[in-house]
Image 1 (tube, rainbow, N blue to C red):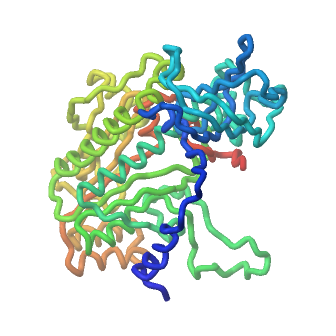
Image 2: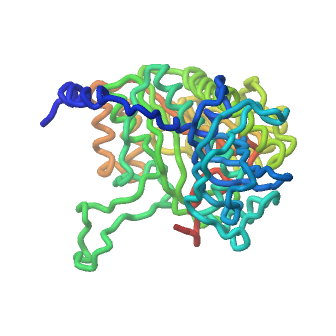
Length: 453
């Protein structure tokens, strides 16, 4: 098997191949072309889709976008170009000179020398029309095409940037990234809202399971992270999770992404809260810094009036009944429409793995939720019950001792105080962009009675 060093050495001769005498046009993304500093007639090649076509006297103007930025690149061409196939939505390759634009609307433009139509688009049949601002509900009907609109383009660029920012936060904070399994035999939440995994083949024996035990799509990577926290003091995962909830509400999806972290040697909720708050602020400031135009588009046209602020922190104690969405939004509004940390929930309302506070009549667990404006619960976390006998008793009361013997083993062999949290990624995007429906912040939404593509 080839080693990495051998492969690197083998690739070196490829970089020493003599360059051709005639230098080809440099390929640039629209974003790089718009930000180019040297505009002294450099020959470049830009590929993308036509967002607009217009004629002015003997000049043809195109606006080309390739998804790398909200702003499109203006292409100026002589009217002698065959414009019959240059329609809104068509894909093109344009070669020419990148020059300083005389217009105040853009700094640079591409003076076309060659325009090649790569793929035609029937503008009359295309469901999106030039200069029309289609509502998000309408775009949802076309999951295979809606990414070509400005609105979804901006949302998906923010999603990409937020993903990178979250990974950077954990990397810079010393966390180890763990790939937790998507197929599991555990039900972390205990809610029973699971998708069971079975082979599609009809050859299977009905009374037997493929894995010898019932297997499900994961609802959380937490328990697997707890396994890893016995060897690494800080771990996280970021991946898809699944809930078989029969709901078509604006807050629910059957498939969504979760950011989850587990930290060893943690003995107070305050330590968890600091990490949760740091993740939220760092990721948001990165998105604001790197995607200002995309964020502004969402605030201006999709969610007018929604703005992002650097939030203060408040703590609120509550016990006795579970909190529903209406309660969460009321608490946020009551505290001035800022994010609110709610801590110490009644033990009877929470799963077996949360640490017992042993606090008398209230009898709470060391749990924490972060509630945010417009969304409700964004983060959920807790200290984990690291004491063997406490955990053993709770599992016994729930009838789960046999299924979770491995979980008890973690407390027998070098257990430490630890805790963790999870953040719904789509809800985070809803929060910072002000998007009302969760189905509009994920590329391909899956929910009850809908699995298009």
